Image 1: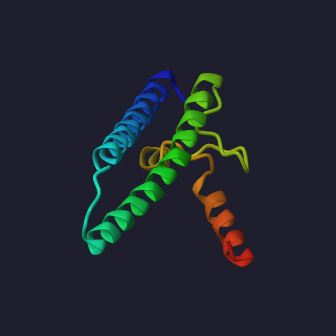
Image 2 (image 1 turned 90 degrees about the vertical axis):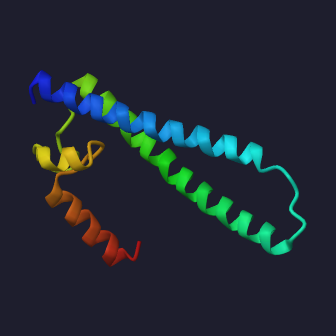
Length: 120
């Protein structure tokens, strides 16, 4: 992959990372602001349910941040866009949709089939 394309994907990854970190800070601020006690138990239950949902989303984003950091490291190492399973190139269309992808579409499908068979 040429330098121009690598720079494009680097900026795409950095933008995605920035958005996630901004969302995390926003959630943290909301958590700090929602420290008041609610008298109504239904309101408390709704707030706790919403909080649990937000925390699950943030957990997924934490995992995505790790993948983004891994992709950024691969750019620096010169291995970005290479499938970790077969060693072939990952299609640019796939990288545009999921710039943190580490597998080509064929290997990703094979991985998903195996996970389905194992019941994961």
